[in-house]
Figure 1 (cartoon, protein in one colour):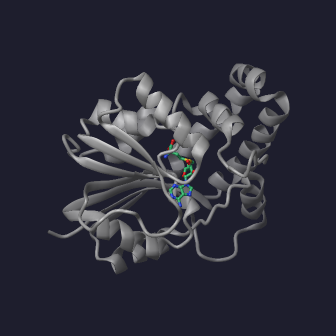
Figure 2: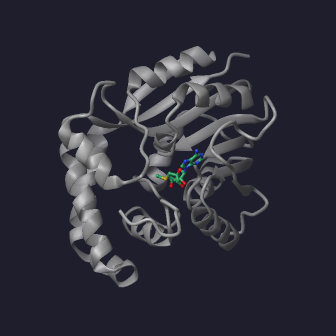
Length: 261
Ligand SMILES: C[S@@+](CC[C@H](N)C(=O)[O-])C[C@H]1O[C@@H](n2cnc3c(N)ncnc32)[C@H](O)[C@@H]1O
């Protein structure tokens, strides 16, 4: 995968992923999948930290569709943050959504700052799940919820050759961990009411239609902006991803835990 200027999510990548997943979205499912991640949670008026906000589509959905009071989106790369800020301004939500650049490591907030810590498909880039969960627990108010989706690996052993090849093709510094490791990290941090829900079944199907679209009109449109070579690289990634989804080794998962009051 190309790295422009050192950023993993460079402008060409943002453009490519938005072509597949929708404006402002760098992960699958769009607003419908965001709704499934937060299903049953009352976000109205809540202050939310979004870890790995990417291009901003998630934060807009949290405000518009779920009544979030204020969302602080954090990310480590400038191109996604520039994109998110422009999109948030375009839809008139600058008073409700802030986009902040951070460095990997401890979260730059005092204890008990947020009602909810949210994340969608970004924690895969943060290899130390135990350290992250301690930080998430720290910045949550008592009674607050961690509500997330992420890309997990089905086990903690050596990845199969197919999985290793897929991860290498992504070229995105994935630090994948198993459901057991996420659960242990949340337990060790002090979370209660922990739940994990596999989304493998859903994404196995969705990824197939994404691949078809990449090979068809969506890919042709995207090629005008990012070049056919880059579309072809992405077709190759999707083609490697589907078999590891089918094996269950790649398992997108929804995660939840509550900080006791
Ligand atoms: C797959 S994208 C998902 C973006 C967004 N959540 C979405 O679903 O559209 C992953 C994002 O995580 C960001 N990221 C990587 N490491 C991070 C870290 N340590 N802290 C915060 N964000 C990080 C990347 O820059 C990227 O924008």
